Amino acid sequence: MHIQSKYQPHIDGLRAIAVLGVIFAHLNLIPSGHFAVPGGYTGVDVFFVISGFLISRIIFNERDAGTFSYVTFYARRARRILPALFGVISATIIAGGFLLHPLEFEGLARSTVAALAFSANIRFYQIADYFGPAAHDLPLLHLWSLGVEEQFYLVFPPVTALILRFKRPAVAVMVAIIVSLALAQFMLPLNQPAVFYLLPFRAFELLIGTLLALPGFRKTSSPKIAAFTGAVGLLLIAWSFHYLGSPASFPGARALPACVGAALIIWSGERITTLPTKLLGFAPIAWIGKISYSLYLVHWPLLFFVNRLQQDDPANGFIVLALTVPAAALSYYGIEQPFRSSLRLSPKATLSFAGAGLAAFAAVSIAIVVTGGLAWRVDGEVNRLTAFLKYSNAEQYRTGSCFLPSPADIFTSLKPQCMSNSQRPVLLLWGDSGAAHLASQLAKASEAKGYDFRQATASACAPAVDFDFSARPNCREFNASTLQRAIELKPALVVLSAAWPAVNEVYPHLGTTISRLQAAGLKVVVLGPSPAYHKAVPLILADRYRMNNPDRMSGDDLNSGLLDYLERTIKGVVAQNPPAKYISVFSATCPTKNCPLLTGTTPVQFDGFHLTEPGAELVVDRFSNLLFKAAIDQRESSR
Image (tube, rainbow, N blue to C red; front, side, top):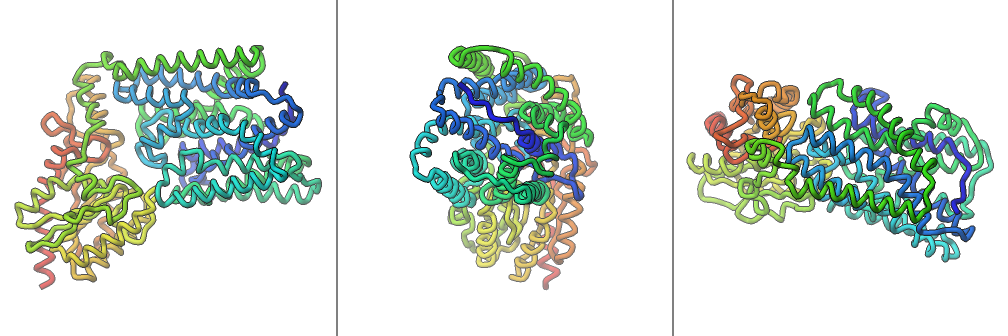
């Protein structure tokens, strides 16, 4: 038997705030201003607290009444989660069959299998930085949070039996919260993606909700205290949405304001209706909360496919919002509600149907994987081009020796030869993957000009000293160590290059890097960005091939807005730090602002920015004379 709890509209209102924060942040509907919500992704943290509270309350109530059943519990979870999930997965697979190339379709199927196995968070931890550009190429990325909740549902019911054996169960839960939070804080500098995606480091958020649901947990009867507490909770969530724009060092303690805010709102409305809870319970807001699960499920795949059909159109966010609400309402009234309320099945029958559904969807997904994303659907040339999406660049980048791919790696992991002394003049390349993709060809060009080539590069660590990069907490240490070693090495020329980010805060630190190198008597050249595109170059070429478009130049697919911003910004920083020189790699490669997409039969880039080996040969050949001329000019100007 399921003990029904009194409906609390303020919790649906809290769900509404959480889902709107996530959607507005993802759709970038308010990019700046007082009402911008760049930290709206913390809405997921609010959801975790709500889920922890509601699930724990059900289990504790039923255990107290002696009616708890594992079969009934998991049957309710299946009815709540799976029908709408099956609907969204079905629609995504059908759309993917029409719009995705085989390799992408295979990736979608792999993500589907992970979601059906309640491990989507583990899958995306392995393949994607949630805040990185590659995340936008994954139509089911948002299911990572569902994976965390599903794993919590699997392990938590038996844990509740242990909790209730404690004389003071609240103390046991608080200890678990502290341990999970401490683990998250400890791991953030070592492996931020693990902390973001995996349950042990997110458990404290769900357990905060559990703490509220414990039998005997004190609730206030004071209207003033309840109103004050609810207002503080709303302010904490608003603060998180507005001020946590940068995902650096998140979640961990930085997730606490949103989590504590959610907990305060839930607690404030448990016994008393106050102004904050009345506002949250306002019927239109509560309705959004009721359909919040479907809203969350449908918004990300819609964003993915709308962007695929009209890349980077400023109107895309509003188009997706206009589609999301009716799609979610259809899912809620046409799928969620019938399966939760109208369809009368016993718990065992529900689990049997759920297992059959999971098996059927898994079978379809595995078939897609086995057939290479139904590769027979398209011409072999399309498959040849899209195969470059999996381009292997380890030798080109000197991965594991002079390029550190992992955020956990630090400067000392570089092999000694990467920064070793030499009797000849040394050219040092310093930067991230946007430097490493030039390394093999720049080494050849340097050798031809009489330089010994050295390299210090690390993933997502642009050469900006004293700056903390999102998801790369060791970048500060890497850059500090590289600067010190460069001063000791005294290279004839330091070349700074990167996949320069569109983050204003980085560039004063680039200026600091240049000034410190020059203060040590070193010559500096800064390379601007290589050509950048709205989507991966192999996909551009494959799409054109399928449309019988023979054009192999960039055209409108070039990300001109980003390139203009980066060129203007970096050039301005270099101009403020003479005699350092700036070289526009983009202008040297594409003098007419129309860039080659192919060199021979190989795409110049394997994604939207990073060069293949033949692409690097083409690009380095076009700017190398400018580079060595800049070195000579600096030497002569210093005499």
